[in-house]
Each structure stands twice: as C-alpha cells, then as structure tokens.
Figure (cartoon, helix red, strand yellow):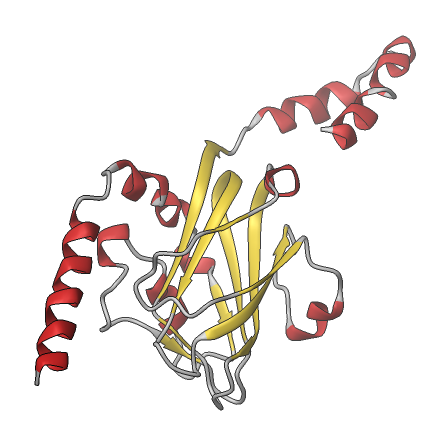
Amino acid sequence: MSGHGHGHGHGHGCGCEGEHEPAERGLEYGLYQKIDLEKLQCLNESRDGDGKLVFKPWDQRNDRDKFVDSDADEELLFNIPFTGSVKLKGIIISGENDSSHPAEIRLYKNIPQMSFDDTGREPEQAFRLNRDPAAELEYPTKIARFSNVQHLSIHISKNFGAESTRVYYIGLRGEYSEAHRHEVTICNYEATANPADHKVESIIPQTNFIS
C-alpha cells in the first residue's frame, strides 16, 4: 500500500515542475505553424491524414487523442514542406511508453516527394531515440546542415520492437524566414547580364556553398 501512495505523490511532484516551464519554450516550438499542412505527406500511415495530427502546439504535446500509427511495418516517412525557409535547431519525438515508440530517426532536407526507396541515401543527421512519452527530450541538430530548409523529411526507421509505431507529437524548434521573391529578379538580371558582369557572378556560387 505504501509503495502505491509514494508513486502517486512522486508523479504529482513531476507534474508541477512541468507547469513552471518558461513560456519561450512553446514559442520556440512554433515551427508547426510554418508547415504547409495541405502538402504534408506521411507514408505508411495506417489512416489517411493522421500524420498531420502530430504537428501540434506545444501545450497540446501530451494530447493522446491525436496520433499516427504505422501500417504495414514499423516505418514512417514524413515529408514536411515549409512555407518559407527554416533553420532547424532541434527536434522532439514523443510516442507511447512501450515498444511502439520510435527508436531511430533519420533527417533529410530539401528532397520533396521523398519515398522509402530514397531512404537508402545518407541522411543529413540520424538519432537514436529514448522513449519520451512526456515529450521532454530534445535532439539538437547540426545547425550548419539545416540552415536553409524548405522541405524536411523525417524517416522513422525502427521502433523498440513492436509490429507498428505510434507517434503522438513531433516538435520542431528553429528560426523561420519568409520565402524571398528576389530570385525572380536575379533570373531576369542574369538573362540580360553584360559579359563583364560574369566575372563577379562566377564567384557567387562558391560563396553560397561555403555558407
């Protein structure tokens, strides 16, 4: 009996701590608002459209009513288009506290319409996950690799041994900037460029690669 009572008290204490988190954390995890949800795809979801449900506000991260289950096996592949350019700094993935929780993710950037056939290529970054039913663990990305992301693919390649995978919440932390329209101007300028300008322009692509 006493053990039971102790468990209750301890759980309550943990809950209180969570209440005092700074509000900024919720703002930092606001990138879900910059996803083009109409075009978001989740491959191998058991029910059409459920993959979109796991990108939700920070204060709803522990909502158990919205989730996605994998279908044929444990893998899931999210194709996430943003409405502008994102610098991705961290990711949280939360599932059930059992063997259906994702155990490994692989991140790819700027490969629209990615399929499972494409997941054999080298990811920008991969993480081994811990079970995180409370959505508390952030996995920091290598920011230099994720500084100009218009499209993010998240491949959940395995779970902790269950036949299917369940995800309740995917949180994305980072910075967002609007899509710029000046590319059009640059193209027009290129079309009418003087030969003299090309000396300068030939240097530009290399600086882009360095950054």
